[in-house]
Image (cartoon, rainbow, N blue to C red; front, side, top):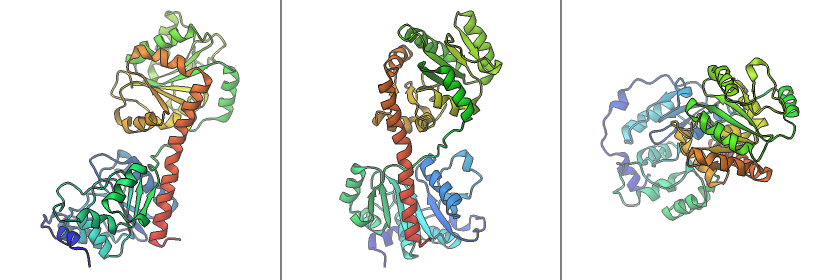
Length: 394
């Protein structure tokens, strides 16, 4: 029998629209329900979804917000947290397990899942709390929700301590770190990388990735200043608009820069100062060749145009401006781990670049970034292992 708090919460009256809403047929075979809380997509939860589908052969029902590339997946609005809605939802989909991404706990859902004998896992857990508007006024509801969970994957020691204090059973609590967000290691042609690495020899190199027009002056100003102390410094510049590569190269030559243009099949010679490239498909090549990457659109735009995990996964130290945009959480994690260097404004870019040109400093930053990028894989695997064990999968 469910504890009183959960039972009463489950039977709070709700609208019944979810009961009559048309649902697509349930697919054959195994199915796991993955619920993402909040109003924004959770890339780490979506990566877990991909791994379940691709490696385990499990159908995944995703509820909550999803990014555009999953819009065609099996995606539904979650039921309201009332007994009838949740029961109808579970009876239709018949999942073998329920995985909740970090967010408020749903008392009625947890009670209904437990009544059906379903394991309930909480991933990327940061703080114990109930969903807004839930039956928090029932004494002990939060503690009873935590006691009903089969596994809690806490992001760090502080989160684990908060869950223990709130009443989570020690045997279901693990400190796994944050789960991995999808960031495939970008490819490159090894022969091309080796040939260019030979041309660069021991030159210091930095890369401005997806640089908008508005930031070109700041990057070139920083490059000119640092050239005064590092005469062989090479800037690889990828414009945000690839069509701008040729006119930009011509403009830079008129301004007195020594330029090579990739699309004109020009190789960077020892005296080349700026190597203008124009293919986003070659990002993996430039991340591998440049020990330092500046994330374009982070100084004056709406936020970094590329994920910082791309250079992080390939050993390039990350330099960025104050505007993180959609990658704010990732850059925050990298900054906390001393795995990225932020500048407050364009005039600070030259100083930061000059500092990172010391090989040991760039290497420390790149190593820390690689650790942040790779640690999430272990957390995702830990959740998958526990899910296999709890669901009885082989």
